[in-house]
Image (cartoon, rainbow, N blue to C red):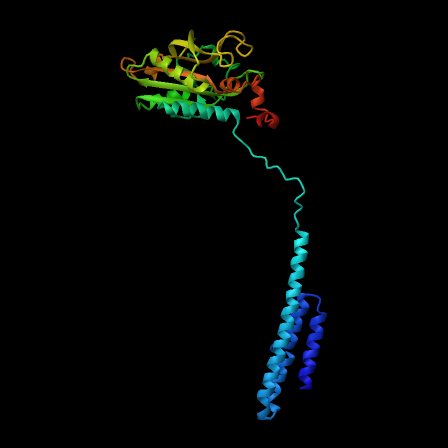
Length: 338
């Protein structure tokens, strides 16, 4: 009895003086563990008279329960203090200003390209891409541009070897498509092109084109005019007017350049259109019979038209940007406007 009272008193004192969870675990092992002091008392019950053993066992269990309750209470106190300390260290000051999350968005050129693709896909065209490094044949010869043409001068074109170059136009993709012989063709070919130009407000050695091609039976210049007029209306507004001026391109005959009425002043004349009321947008024409022949298409059966537009040119007009270089300088002060 005296031994049990001593164990209970010692356990209570040590539990009360424990300063952390590790010390508390040590106390539990020393008093309640397999080799603890209470276990030793139980092992010594063989020396007690048989009639006293039940009473002694009951007393040992009561003391065990008391010690366990004290341990649990102390443990709960420690856990509460740990949680309180953690909450204090992780407190959020709601009076501090929030952090602005910078969210990116599409580049003006990408937005313009997607709009152009949506317009032509809606008219039944497919989008076709091709290689930026191209053979001279596909970039020039197959488009009716002979070896002595000025466009093939090294001052205008980036040649890698005598027969390989960085494409100057995405028309080369149209030749690849025509050579497949899968007629009719209704396609646009967007992509990056390269020309040896000085960098200024309207020129760059690398820029983007979107070229279109239609090959079918009975295609005429009237189909070309109707298609491009619908394109201009969807892009710049339903009241947009178009006009075609005679021009010369090696791979089309007849050829033309298309202007649209100024969407800023509605054709009255302003700074945006330089007082003319019209803005030049693209070049176009009926595919030259010789171009069809070189790609294995019979010009007596099939005809077609082609057009090409500079993507940056459309972006500059559409978003009223006055310097092409702004599109490539990656200045967020400019780009975040879009």
